[in-house]
Length: 426
Image 1 (cartoon, helix red, strand yellow):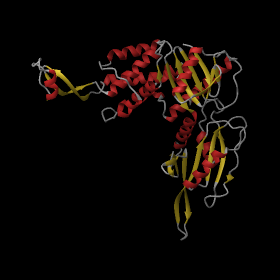
Image 2: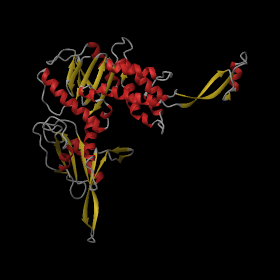
Image 3: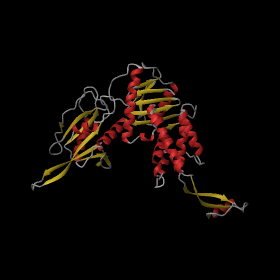
Image 4: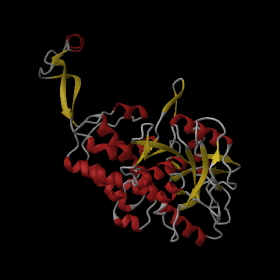
């Protein structure tokens, strides 16, 4: 299966670029349809091609896989060898960031798949099939459902109006409403639909063998049209809480699947993540691991701003400090600091006006003396000093730009990223 590897903010057109990457006209049209369906948020349509944005992940169109990777530097691959080396580094970074952020549970994936550097979609496919296999081995849950029908034996509640209307001739039958206890319910129908989509979108022999095996053991249930509203109707109970992983991936498969009705050979599935959101959650998880009795880390604290609108700083850090009160006694207080993460490269160490106004509001609402705009490090970017807001809270009211290294010296995710971030503000 052909794989095209690109990085965020790169272009891909129907004409081959310097690295031999291109898409067909049919694939280009399919990408345009997908982007239109999603309010043009995933990429920008340009002449004969597309320009990717901050969304990363995998798009599969028919037999083609397009892997969009993050990249926190401006170095451009000059040949296919450099592209392969760089893409391996950032593929590993993306997988680990997803795992740490809770978006991908790598412990479910086999070591063989990870060694083969399977792309992100195939990893999700394997997790889904593994979870389904567990559920089928334990036995899918059954539920009671009401069924109205003509039956030959009286059971349940006799529906007089329906009975008279339908059984004037067939008086040996009864029109009743009765209970069935079986697998025929929405949760199982969603899981089955996810499995059916996998069978149309995967070509790998290993995965196809698993899919056929699971389809064989799946109970006989009716196929239903599944929409986003269907997932709102699902109510997990104590008996079905172990379905959460499979249900979450089934939702991703179903809502991001675009079948090609006209041709049948350009089915499309996309799994894309906003790097701004992923960077924010990743930094939070790393900081949360540093939490102790003197340091609290809060994710997306919120407060009312105007009417029903709320504001959400990415991360609030509370540090315990011991002070003397006016009576001369000591007491503990929790001093808040604000971190707002930004996944973008800036050439000049000056924040935008919009970012500064946003941080000013956060300082005021959370009564914070300092806030930090946190960016990925690239090149020789250096932290700014703490700049002062001239009005607002009494005492210190400051903001600065800080940069942290995404990679360490070995080209792996920086294990000290949380320590670096904390030193810049606390």
